[in-house]
Image 1: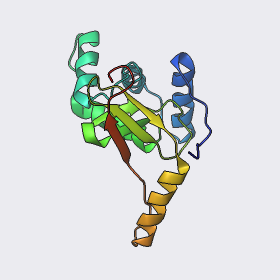
Image 2 (image 1 turned 120 degrees about the horizontal axis):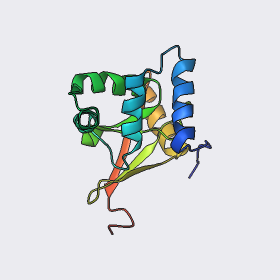
Image 3 (image 1 turned 90 degrees about the vertical axis):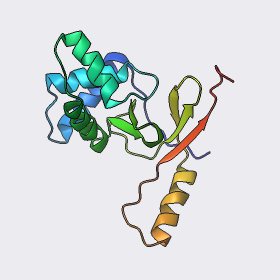
Image 4 (image 1 turned 180 degrees about the vertical axis):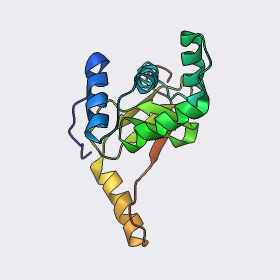
Length: 152
């Protein structure tokens, strides 16, 4: 496996890295964006915008609209702070914001936990195949489903 080297962040370092990455793109790190990021980062399984909105609503004691959360999550995906898990219509925090590469996601069919591996040879081959077929701006979306070691 050809791995892509990067630094994984957690806790306050993850929040700092996400804020720095977003602000370096000219975007503001608002209170609502921070809340959505914190909520997303608290999940080990992909979370939907509705899950995040419901949890924030309960915490705040007032309704947070899922549409607002979707907009923030889309901003996070565009700026590499989160990844969209297509097969689950959900999102997962990017533990290495600012490091842009293609992840291969592993999703447990039993507990829902998600993780990623990096294999530049596989994702590079997919990019090349897309370019050979006449596509530009190819971004591989690779998701593997199965049972994690805890559930197997």
